Image 1: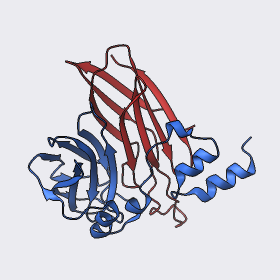
Image 2: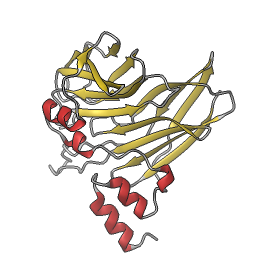
Image 3: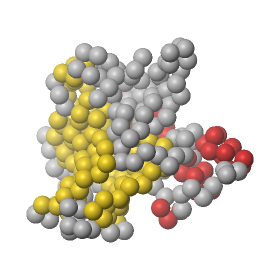
Image 4: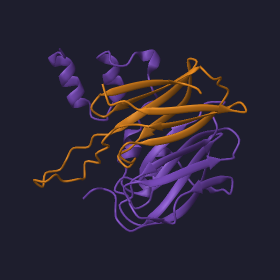
Amino acid sequence: MGNPMRIRASVQEGMTEVKVLMQHEMETGLRKDADGKLVPAWHITELKAVHNGKTVLEGQFGTAVSKNPYLVFRFKGGVSGEKISVNWVDNKGDTRSDEVEIS
Amino acid sequence: MINLERRKALKTGGGIGLLAILTSVGLIQPSNALATYEVIAFDAKSMNETLAALGVNTPEDSMSVHLTVPEIAENGAVVPVTVSSLIDHTEQIYILVEKNPNVLAANFTFPDGTESFVTTRVKMRETSMIIALIKANGKFYRTSKEVKVTAGGCGG
């Protein structure tokens, strides 16, 4: 299981804004370590955000998304107290899922 | 304890058919399956190769696509990018970095009800154009801006 994400979701005038900070090294596969060896690519490949059983965002990341990926998106609807979950998968098969209540 | 078959499947998975492999070893239930990871597009090394992999012919320059990036990025490892599309029925937003070793940085899919807007942060190896590519109603639109990079971001 990957490292926990920080998620903030708040609703204003019928629009829920979600901010996510994921924890992931996002290695490009082009970096060399102290011994001069290439560090293998290791990065989140896919993500999905779900609200009330409905997918509200899907994303695919290549190696050029920054370390500890940051994401902001907005969707219509959402009520305080309802849950948003954000889920990701990386290229090694690791996964992470976190959930937060809309404030 | 993870069994050897699963370990082998995961090891050989890489990016190809990742979804199929994860599903077959039970890590993803088919009903939760995400869209097929666009391996070929993410591996493409040039703009032309990337656009070809995405099935894009000649994207139309559009003033309805707003791209917000810094003029100068002091740290090429963390360059904030915001894309907003005012085009009706925007389905996808792609973020491309022209001079990166792999041009396609990320893509996002917007179901009905989700605003065609996203903010994220990308790595840039050097000063380059950032291109926001939009897919709406099956057609492609684009806009681009140059970002100057003073310290490259691929950690080399």
